[in-house]
Amino acid sequence: VRISPSGDGKAQIALRIPEPRLWKIWDSFLYEVSLSLKGKGTTWKQRFGMREVSILDGRIAVNGAPILQRSFLYNQIWPVALGVPYKDLARRDIELVRQANANMLRCFSKSPVPATVKAADEVGILLQPESLASWYLLRGEKEHRRLKNVTERNVLLYHNHPSILWWNILNENSPQENPENPSLLGPYALQEVLPSLHKLDSGRPAICNDPIWHDVPNIW
Image (cartoon, rainbow, N blue to C red):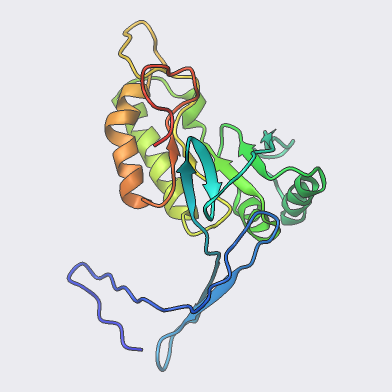
């Protein structure tokens, strides 16, 4: 296959997969794509799953079927790190979720480490990634840039992983301006971060807060 890059140095290729097997909760079928240059070059391999996330009649659906979320809050706090320090421990945590008959983890206030996402892809567990920006940033130009940067990097890192159900930008914030609230990031998230997120990944819902926002939608 010959691939010609565009003016910005990017190239795209489309392949048809007849009768694809979809990635499902607890039934996590993964494909592997391998790319290599003709002649000399490094072979690039990546696994991926095929599935669709949507909202049907107000309910989250995977592959067109509404799901009942059975989720735990996953703090990912260990003595030596703000994440799971070893791959085998990440795998163990995901397998324990499956044994508990749950289907989802909320990765509370931080992005999951790659080993956690890999294990969730393989076992068939959904993840809600967050970031430290959802809790610990104050308002201001510097913090605004950090929130946008952390969110975009999270999407770029994990958008090809089927276990990622949706993106979460903020938590317990407000969409209205309030000069007396130093941690108010909601207006900026709605105006700047959410459009950027959807541009990077238009195939997933995004949460910009929790249900305390009664005057605007919570899921986009």
